[in-house]
Picture 1 (cartoon, helix red, strand yellow):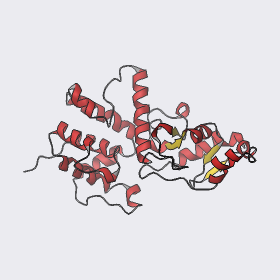
Picture 2: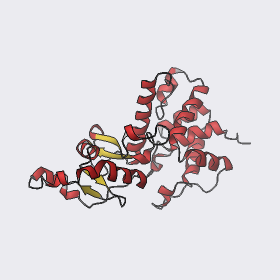
Picture 3: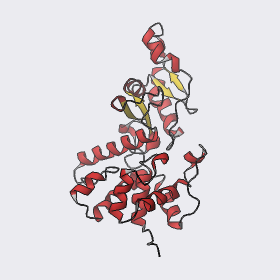
Length: 254
């Protein structure tokens, strides 16, 4: 008889699901193989469990992608508990990893989620920022949502509602509060020179429009005005956060 999954194991599987694009959920994925080793399960078992979660994922359903139809009641319980609170998922997954008493070499391989180090505030903040960056960039498949630039060194996970204004428990590391932007458009978005409206279209500020005669500004900004951003395969930007940016960051530049 197959060994039943525990809630702790499912938390780790769901945390990894949030870090891996659906097309990369397979038995040859190194992260899946690493988690399988930690759980003393087969890579096929871990991959199947991750595909079970996909059946609840509306962002995949909107793209015509369906997960496995069969699954346990516990799958639904874990999804309902954590899918709208990834900050809590991050905390719980780290606690579970620590409970497995990982050796240093195995924890190095398990890089999908940060482990430990919460005793000092600065370390905790850096871990949260790393979690946010990884999740946002992977959701956008490592490509700028405005230009499509896919050079990792040029990409930022940009907060829609700024870090300083965000609730530390529900907003700062929420991937729906993030956009994958290249460094130039990240700076412009952060300064309120551009925004994304609630239809996911790019809007330019008056300050940018003052530089319309400049070839570079026409190339890097005006060509995108009114265009829709490339939406992520998972964790679509929250319209609530976009509305906050529209009013509190962007409108001061109108």
